[in-house]
Length: 229
Image (spheres, one colour):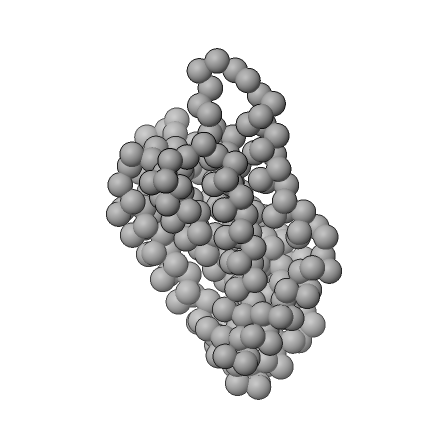
């Protein structure tokens, strides 16, 4: 527990020193708030901009941030030191990703407060948002672990973030893409935030499957980094 706490505190301090990362957690809810209150068009769904920006935030915003912080540890040889010191994959992941999960959860709560949701809709919204945030962090962690430095993490993470983030939007207009996109956690986030009458069972099951696959890949990549060290 002490190891996780130490890594968590280190990550929190590093993040607070990086204004660009902090801006990301503010800009998406801010845009949702501004667009919701300034754009007044007849027949426009009341929560359109809230759900749109929330889905983009959960599905795209955290991937490059998570990959960058891990790639930075690799570049500075910090990860090698931690692995040699006996830090387990889950300890490093929870410590590193924990602060991002915390801030992502706070951002999700802000989205929920901006939106005009019922109590049940709010619970569904937060369920897919927080699980989606966790999956994005895991995906970013895998990308970061496969990178040699921050530059390569950005080069790999950006197109992946765009792919998983925009595929659900394309799926709305293409049936073939929709079938393929069904396995993506981002598609399941969109299913719920755009239709709160939909069942949570399948979306959460798909998101959980994504988490299991990504967690397994992270552990494998982490151990390989240890072998190289």
